[in-house]
Length: 341
Image (cartoon, rainbow, N blue to C red; front, side, top):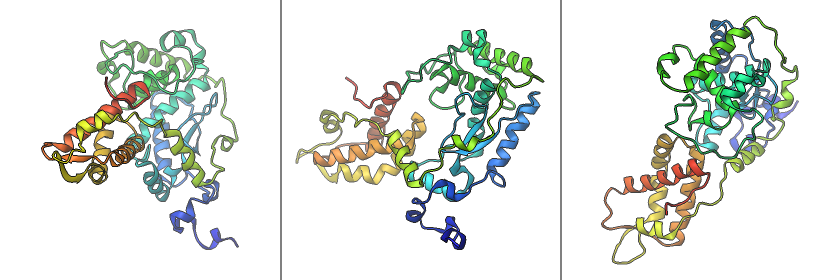
């Protein structure tokens, strides 16, 4: 009898748990809230007259394997203990609420339908959305006020790639009680929504062009230790160190004896980090982990420069939050944290 037999893994301390392989947790969708959310997706598809129900499996992230009409759902959503650990490491749980989960799974269902019926090969699909073979870029420059794309996931995700444009359009089309004809009236995106509606009607009752694979576990990426998973994930979100120009920081804070208060800038930032991070994340829609990285670098740099809060600085919370929001917004548009010139 192994230790896993005598002591359930979810009772292990976190520093023990992270050394376990994710496959050892023997996670299942059945019997979890995830199962009911998937059932809701299938009901929404049926309500639109669509019979194909993309199979779902637990994986290391939200995705559809390329060319495979199936949906990968993050493993941590299958257990409350793992959701807490995800939140500890990443400061948020992607898909952790029913509303967010449904938005994400509708999006992935769009990819699954595109693969299942080879929709991306149709000439009109390519004319409206672009070429699916277009290379994915690490960053993209969104146009927030463009009416050529629907608004579904954060950060104008439909603008990132033709495949994502279709998946986002499909998700909006599928969302119950979404009066998309009214909401997008006058938008160029309406033509895309009308095409998705036309396309879905055309495949009703049709056989799949491409069927899901039987062994979806091979795509899961879960045969690794939990520690390795978070090492990879945090590294994926790491960015080049931002250009923290001393001129900017010294404009906010000071190292001059006659101007400084008794509060070190680094101590202030440490104290208010928990308050600033969610606020900036809310307004920019950027991941909390990336903002936390930015805060860590700011704290280290202000400490190195021995900077203090200014005596005469009013509305310090607003000033600091505005500065960090500006850096994060610039990052969203350029892929780099950098100061304005």
